[in-house]
Image (cartoon, rainbow, N blue to C red):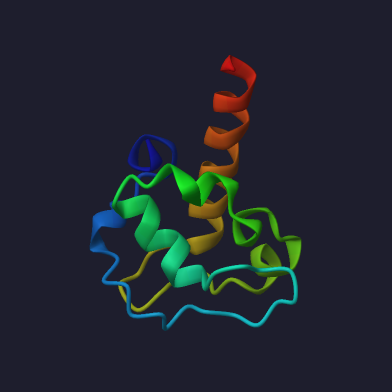
Amino acid sequence: MISARTGQNIARCIGCQYCDVEAEDKDIPLGALIYMAVLDDEACLESRTLWSEEVLQKAPRACAEGLNLKQIIIALREEARQRSAWS
């Protein structure tokens, strides 16, 4: 799903946590969120980190593996909205 929306292969994420940012309203590190998405863990769609505007604004444009984290966050948010509309 992320590949289709962003053209990025998030399987390249190695869970290094290099991309983590400080934000008061996050519940897990940004790198953990991305890695959860790699593992198809749906809990990432309910994470406060995903919905944090502060995390979105502070997310590096590219991680150590060259992924555009802002695009990935936005794609995950869109997926979460679609899934909640189906429920």
